[in-house]
Each structure stands twice: as C-alpha cells, then as structure tokens.
Length: 107
Image (cartoon, rainbow, N blue to C red; front, top):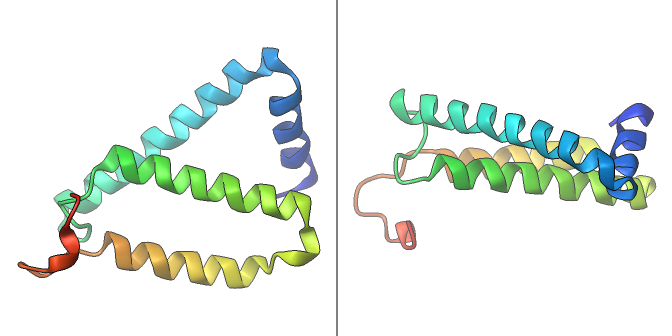
C-alpha cells in the first residue's frame, strides 16, 4: 500500500463525508471479487458449495485487516510472507472438494 492509499484510508475513517465514496469503492471491489468467484465456480476451479458474496466479504475484510496491521506496525508485517501464506490459504479454501468430504459442514 503506497502513501496515497494510506492517506485515503485515514481520510475515510476520519472524515465521515468520505464514507459514501469508500463504501461505493468497496461495493465495486466486492462485486468484482464475487464475479471472479462465480466465474471460477462455473469453470470448475472454485468449490460450488461456497457463497460468492461471503467469499468477497471475507477477502475484502482480510485485506483491510492486513492493511491496518501494516499501517499500525509497518516493521511487524512481512508483506511477502503474508502474501504467500494468504494465497495458499485461499487456494485451499476455494478449491473444489472431493465428494463426501466431512469438512464441508456449514455450507
């Protein structure tokens, strides 16, 4: 995240009149992610048991949380390591599951 984006995030939280702009941007980002998940489901590369809306909210939430940690403690976050870990986690979560897997509870 560059300095301009950090400044924009700070402004979004400290200037209530900017909140609608950031809500709109977040909604557009979630819509793009939702479309990507739907395309993955249709293409057979994403688990069809996942809800695209839930996945989009979870990804945006995770990115926001990581960004906040980076803002609060830039030296305490190894961005490259986090990127590798998070990419691995999402690949596992999104991958289609073999039929009959017990870990599909709650879907």
